[in-house]
Amino acid sequence: MHRRNFFTAATGTAAAAVPLVAARPHSVGTTDVIRLRSGLDALTALDASRGGHEALERTALAGAAEALDFQKRAASQRIRQRLFSVAAEYTTAAAWSAVDARQSNRAQEHLNRALYLAGMAKDPVAELDVWNLYSMAAGQQRDHDRAVSAAQAAQATAVTRRDPLFASLAHARTAIGYSNIGDRRGALRSLGYAEEALGKASLNDPRPAWMAFYGSAELLAITSIVRDRIGDAADAEAASHRALAAIPQRFRRNRALATAQLALTQLHQRDVDQACATAEKVFLLMHGNALPGRMRSRLGDFYRDLTTLAPDSSTAREWMDRYRSEWSQAR
Image (cartoon, rainbow, N blue to C red; front, side, top):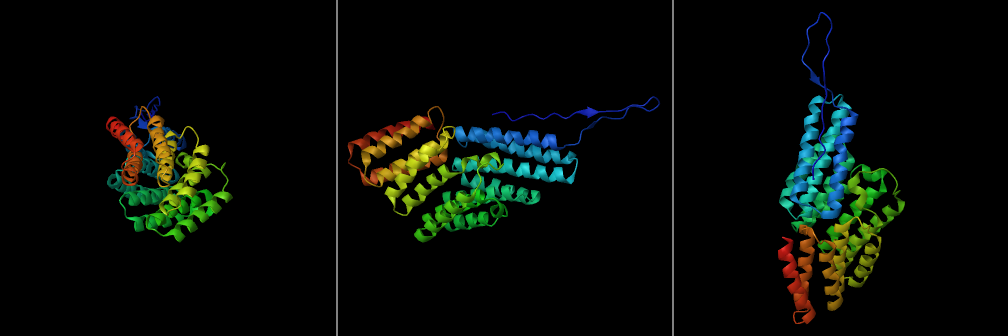
């Protein structure tokens, strides 16, 4: 992944009786901000297909550094603030890549920086993005109370009051946090709020490219996770099927994650043969790319539960052999 290069032009003037003066680089303006921001769209598309990885993370951090460097030549305070916003988005993209790779400690460092930049930019969308990922990183660290608090901080950002789609995402993230601490009522209440907010959202409004993943399909995928974790495996399976019918093909990583979740819901209903057949599809969907850490973790959950629930099943043993083989190749 090669980030876009930006070139600066130098101009100089001369009058008949005046010596040439040193050329100065042009001021950074709106066109430069747009060009720099376009690199975020490319990173988002790469992430949707392949998932988080170190090259994406490095490229995102380089984009953030370039945005901050551009501030030295910003044409106005407004442009300077927009560059802070772009730097925050690039830094959050790096954090997301680390979260998807399940490098939560490294993600935390990026998120601390991104929250500072979003504050400097006075950008509530960037702030929500940061808190959303804070919640995910905390969940990976099994600090589920902190995950709920971060999701509630996302709910409190200004953008949720004017755009119900962002509010829906924040409530959905809170539902996952509650399900992880065993708060069934809180989890279902938050899911209800997420569904209600989504029903009020206009999906055609302009939003950052990173938000393209969220809509009814993603909420169904989250519903499956929440329902499964509070013990409603049948309802979770139904939500997974509906999610897979709706997730766009271009979101290959998300489809693979939803497929792994479907396998878990089937396994939790003791349908071992079907669960193993479903789990195998994850490797087919991600063929040609290393499995991101979050996906490896989801499959690890499946492997652990399969070992617990069906240790003597021949189908289970065959799948576990396949899993070990694919796991070693995917590294």
